[in-house]
Image (cartoon, rainbow, N blue to C red; front, side, top):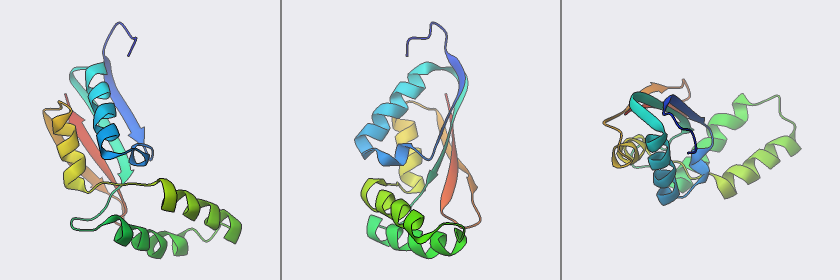
Length: 126
């Protein structure tokens, strides 16, 4: 926020979903303020499916990721699960895009969904 010039691009990955919805919006407004006209903001986050509440998302997290992350020891998985169950608050794709538009980005769209349908990439254009 102290830079004298605007940034051309900003990137956030696997972090903003820890914030409340209002704090996500506040951060996205700050990012929009730091990006010049024509700049972009890319956001890669776990994302709930349309109509999926947090409880269903948590169930899907275990079903999707535990079998894929076989390299983790049980204590390592337990540590990740504790973090996810207490700290992760993902939005739906529609809400991520709505937050981007409300933050002042002229365009907000989903541009990638990972093969597990768990993580998604969004592009916001200033």
